[in-house]
Image 1 (cartoon, rainbow, N blue to C red):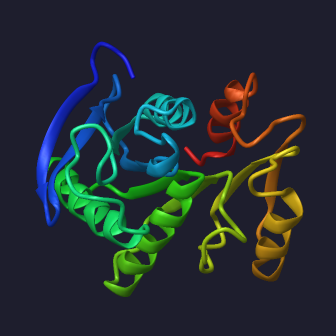
Image 2 (tube, one colour; image 1 turned 90 degrees about the vertical axis):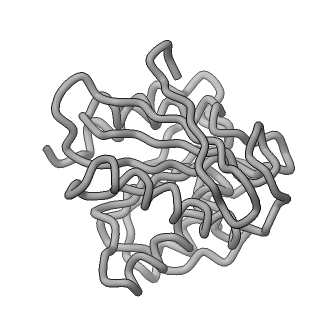
Length: 207
């Protein structure tokens, strides 16, 4: 994300996992772990939406961690339909929590990454340690089997998203009574609208 981003690797079940760490200028208030878009369509942890999310959380004083899914960058292994990726994210989170113990956890994802972090959220909740909050940008409702998410989840979606049409997101969110922040004129990639993601996360966060 910037010159101070620290790259590192940890061991995973399919081989090494490439990660990136960004630290806030002040005392950290939590850990934010972010998932990137679909690896078979060019998604990486350096995706521009994931990077703007990372910048928002660093500005909110979170230790912010990204990772490349299997087969991306120097992460080893092959695409595992989100399930293996969620297992890898759990290991990355465990590593981060050892380095920065006692901090609350936020999960964030963009596109396919929203499915992966939703699987991780289920795992964390089943173990009695759910994340503090989730942020899902372009949530893949109707594309992958997104389960229900916590009531305080922040959903950000583009008005003209042609990959996950807004009505599909509404159909998924409505039974859960989840509010959705819609960025007018934004497509799935948030072309020329990236700044809104940063501003929405900043404005909607509880300090």
